[in-house]
Amino acid sequence: IILPSIASTLKIPASRQQWVGSAYNVAMGCTLLLWGSLADLYSRRAVFLQGSTLLALTTIIPPFVPQEIPFYIVRALQGAFAAATLPSALGILGASFSPGPRRNFAFAAHGAMSSLGSVVGNIMGGLIGASLTWQWVFWILSAVTAAISVAAFIMIPRFPSATGAGAKGGRGRDLDWVGALMSTGGILMLLVSVTEGCSLGWKRPWIPSLTVVSALMLVGFCAWQWYLEHRTKRQPLVRLSLLHNFHVSLSLLIACVFFGSFQSFLYFATYFYQDSLQLSPLDTTLRFLPAGLAGILSLAVIPKALSSIPHVYLLVFATVCSLTSPLLFSVPIPPHTSYWAWGFPAMCLCISADIVWPVLTLLIVQVLPRCDHSVGTGLLSTSNQLGRTFGLLIATAVQGAVDTHGAANPGRQFLRGLRAAQWFNTALASVALAV
Image (cartoon, helix red, strand yellow):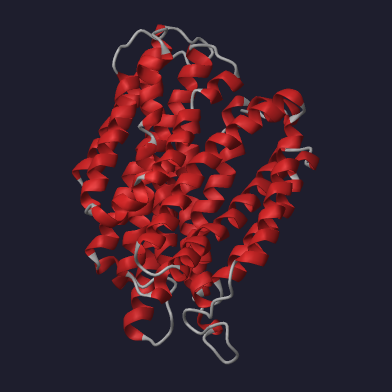
């Protein structure tokens, strides 16, 4: 919503504007495993509080940064600190509630609030950006995050460390910093190389070279984790034996594929409303409001469904909804057909994310021991982030291959490109359904 204003102020060319958001997402994606392991080894409460507090502090800074590259660095710090809150929060929920209806409601509420926060955040960003300036978006978000940090300090109970690492003489020194460096560096280089490859082209020598180095580092990370688990008594960052559990492996795969389709659908739906139909940023955002409201309304149904309906049936229902949404944007419906005829149902069906996420997180928490809850949900969140990144990049490549004119000339060819991308999202959601 505020990207054009930021780009104008910092004089960011169109070819690099995606890094305003990508710097945050890449940093988040490559640090989730580290934060999840730290949360399990030390204290989930402490990791959450430190992450939210540092996020509040770094969110104050972007309006004062006058240059492009330092702005990206601050955005990356925001993403890294935000990543600390996700696996630790899910670990706190798993430790706070015993299996049953209350835990189901807690995880369903977490998913619903995430959806609502995304929609409300976009609406508030549009309102603030239109009435004030883009700098106020960051300052207000910083104040909200600070308030959350204070509330968390007061309300989150103190749990003993799941592994005893936080105690004096415990296993704090067992944190696998070598594995943390390899996993963070490998995922970082992979995301950067793929993002830049899709943006600048793969003919630049450093891009395929960085991709190869990232792949080698990730292979080395897996070998190192296997060695620590099977040949030493040291604690690996991630026990690869966790992946031997069928439910864990399946959850990671579904999260990657599903959220790759879901994120890309929302992205190209935004392009459709804002660039094809030429709607204002606020009018565009209002068309996504049913997605957030559906998540809130789902709290009346999903917790009970999690207790009474087999999870596989819930996942099938959700993935059918998720492939229907992009399908409605793929078929050649006249663009100026009433929003209520097809745009509104497509947004309501975004309830799929509010079903898939709590089901997958509950599966992870139920099948893993308590000492692995945060690292398990960290793995799930990493799969989520990787799926969102790669799904969007591939869909963008599909859209670009069909549309050679781009948003600067939003005519029939531009619409064909958007529909081609949504066909890809439909196919990706179909893969999630098949899995």
